[in-house]
Length: 123
Image (cartoon, rainbow, N blue to C red; front, side, top):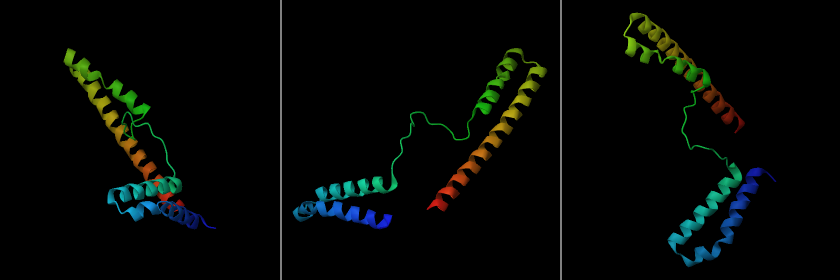
């Protein structure tokens, strides 16, 4: 017996077990029962994952970028000294950070695209 047929039979069995609710005809109760069957079937078929999204993060942020941003703090030095030399240091570091951000975002999008392609190929 194929996986799809088993899944359909599982949903049919669950709906069949709720026959007494259908006979009563209370719409709210019917909706809750149907929703529960649908959710349980979807969990069984698709599975579930746990994620810790307590702190939202960007997919492209990484250690290299974090280090480059920390080094960009030359701006504070410039504000305190107002020298041309420190300002040039800041501009160079700012340019490096922009390059790293662009590279990191590009790599992140490529990885996302590949994961989408692999996921659709698996289906």
